[in-house]
Image (cartoon, rainbow, N blue to C red; front, side, top):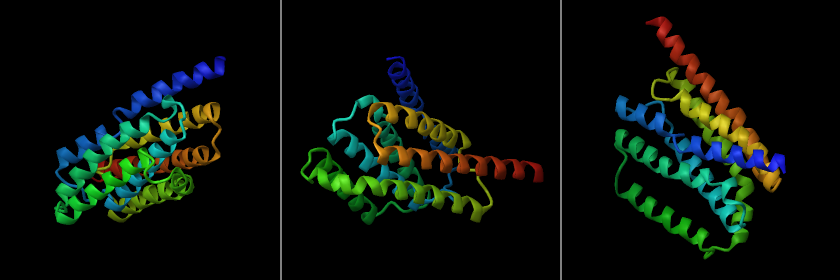
Length: 207
């Protein structure tokens, strides 16, 4: 009983922190008017992972508290992707059509027009997708040797909320697929945060 109450409390903290997860990154982009160190591929992989996991949890009837951060983060991810495409001058007919297709597929998953078995197949792929999105972002930082537009706060929140989810998912469903995804995400989000801090502090020393 006590562990379940702790899990619910951590879920609320996680959801609360996720309300602002991408805000520091969004503000950084808006201020810099540049997205040079942000990987579009990484963002799209993140979007895919968040969408699949939202649909997977929803269609399986898991406790809303155990996954509410996904739709919350998705809303912020939409804004972030829009800004990145805007500053990279990539808003065009193709990106608009791709957006329409994305929302059609997302709604089809939620309404189970696309059979739930498809999500069961896709969910295990979210771990490598999530890993890939973060690795791509790490590579972008290392190549640029600059992290001015990458927010360490965003990645700290990401690492912390993923860590709390390891406990809450274990208490709620002990779903191995979800647990594996969150454990790997903790490690990679922490790596991006530390890399961003390193390159920012290194630049300050050079200045």
